[in-house]
Length: 315
Length: 276
Image (cartoon, rainbow over all chains, first blue to last red; front, top):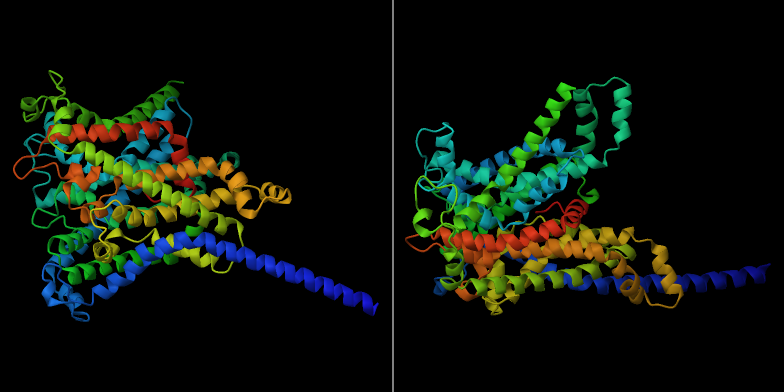
């Protein structure tokens, strides 16, 4: 008995050792496979984000290299807190993000419900949905800029022809309409995409739930509130999170359509930061603006994940 | 019966109204690109070109280095796609199949990187690329773009790899294939559709990127298509004909791609990447 158990332990030990070796080999292989991707991400994403924070605490003007790179602490942040242009750009960014994402959600939901059934020409509709998404944002912005043109634009022509307007409007040239013109462009570009994501969420809901509800005498509206909304909510929230982050860093559309004007009335945070960095070559202040944008994105993600309980891993 | 028919008519009307609104800007773009110069600046605008004029398509290539922009975009987007797929597939395999410490950390890290606003890493990247003499080079765009492509690739491919039954791989290994051999001969062919889907998404993302391309490529001959088109307007005039023609040229291949791979793109977008 004793001898037997000794052999057993010896065998188990050997097997255990082999298993352990196997595990070690496995994790070694894993690290080798993961390394190239992690190095790239580390060098071109993680190191830069830390470095942006570090740069934002310095004075660094690329067009005046003789000034060096003195440490100035939170000077840039303090200066920005009294900077009207900064607060305006933050407000514009929030305004743009809120309204474009809200409109995208409402319209996207309506469209998804509309096309969540089989009908003739469904393929065409789906393709139409993807096209604005696939086109470079700059190109879409150019198209809309021409359509919004005060003299040559088709939007003015159309609105006057149907009698909504009695005179042409300089959509991109006045403070009241410029930001909304940009919102319209963004909504056009991304609503179809949002609809597609919501549609995907809708199609996962099994049809027999609705059958059962119908048998129990639930009305259409009740089915909508009790079944559709709760079941599609996780998919919608994930889509919303990513759309919000995307809208918050808007740059291309603004750059092309208004360049931030008129009188900075459409300038967003990304736009202000990019101008400060690449036009004024003020890397200290520009980095501070970049850090603020990053912190806002963190707060938005935190809000979605903690408050709205988005499960980003299960998307 | 009548009510039912009215409902159906209303439904189709709504659907087609949606399609028309979505497609209208493209119609207008093609329309503008085919108008002769004097008609282009007419107000109110005509709704159809007369006569049809192809001059804008010619001047897009003769007045601007548009062929070079197309070439640059093609090189940058293709290289980014290849890099992302190769590195991303290896990483995704490890995440999907192997046991190791720090896996969850890596996944969370990758996910959070996909949420970074590009502007927040612009300044150090500019300095980094400048110090390595990579401004105005293809590498200077490909490497940062890969960082955007990788999270997408890793998340989508990891979920694809997980769906492939482990038994297939094990039986290959019992037959004497090494772990990487099994990955190459069993997993890769089975995951080919997923890889293809990911490649389309990464390619479109790199092809359309603007902020980095605009900031890192100051030389005209190094510009990519989106930056090139954005720079068409001169100091005094905006050549709307050329811009429209260039937009049509860029848009058509993408529309064809979307039509051909519609299903794949949708499945890719909904299976792992909500990010546009």
